[in-house]
Length: 563
Image (cartoon, rainbow, N blue to C red; front, side, top):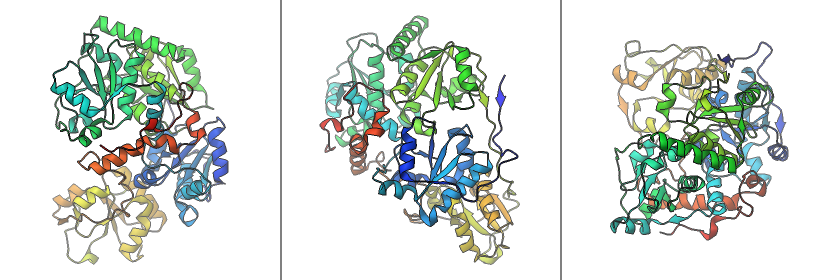
């Protein structure tokens, strides 16, 4: 049984002409008042990653309507939007109007946008996953997580010393590059699977990631569980390995270790329950959890933290899939409401307790449920957002034949990611993105609203959202197609490696983007960034973490990566 709540505009909802403004001072107060708040950066990913408030969550305007239902499922949530403050925050006000039309009835705009936050004396942070990354640095100090550097680990490997090397990232990341011989065990799976890999309690276990956070968290997960083996975090992960002049392994075909047998599973369950109990993780009855879900004045997220394969095979209707390790690594990609509640579920009583423990350390109001996924909870199931009116789709046969005469063709705007456009696109197509699509169509058509416009998109949803803005601006002869259809129709293709320029490609975060592709300077800058996060934070930004006293100290004396 499920409750369905389609996110469409109630009969009384009307788009906002102009959203209420809040000052940076007011927003700062709201962030600390203990009430639910969704602070959404509606700029594109590249802009967000170049500087945003610590508690801001990315919800780019390009896909705002489809993302907001996932990040902010309760429409009465107090919500603040912000952009760059240009043109009196016109984009943020437009985004507020879109949310109002969906029934979000408590939406404000930060006056002056991100620059106003900075002018008020608050930090705009580079990078992504700020709370999780910062907490990794806090946790290393708070729990005194032992570590090993790349050169010492390599020396132990060369000497043939016994050790178990685990890669705590996703399988996809592991296959791209990993340490030689590392076994992939994402952090969310450590509690369940570590016993299948090592039987001698004297064998050291080393956990690595690409940088710092998941190495630290993974090692401490094992220590929380009371693993008898020596446990170490590899300092600076694969990037530190490369900086030490050591070779990484690419294309690993290794997979997750097997599931434990019955005795190992029971031991894992006992260890996980003990760790959660010591950390004070609440365990709700099914009735208490249902009360959370039925409370219309609070937001409750429900996560199934098993593997993707297990989730696909069946689970609790309405629960969202979020592999435990990645949920801890990137809480801001899943939870868009500060001070919301979180129910963490599995079917074995091993993984959910560990994930809930760490979510609580991160400052979230997380709880377990007796019997986990078997609790028969009635989770509100929200159907996909009702998108704007459809846009006619043109396949290869329906597309007009290519003509050298641009006037014989529709104006073509390519809405795909900027990197895909640079690599290959139809000749004459202009790269665009929803925040700029009206201006770009105006330039491409000379302002002639009668000229047909063809949108190239990765999916219909993206085309429909952009078309809504164009229709409101006067263009009605709209259609969309895929890049593959254009190629099949014989339209010539071209590459423009420098266009759009880096400044124009606001969808792409350039900040140390190539640190995993051999750019050692970028790797150094990224690791320096992680080590410097705590020092950038205010007391209020660190206060929400639940760790031993005295943990909020910066960088542990590691001020620069100079390997």
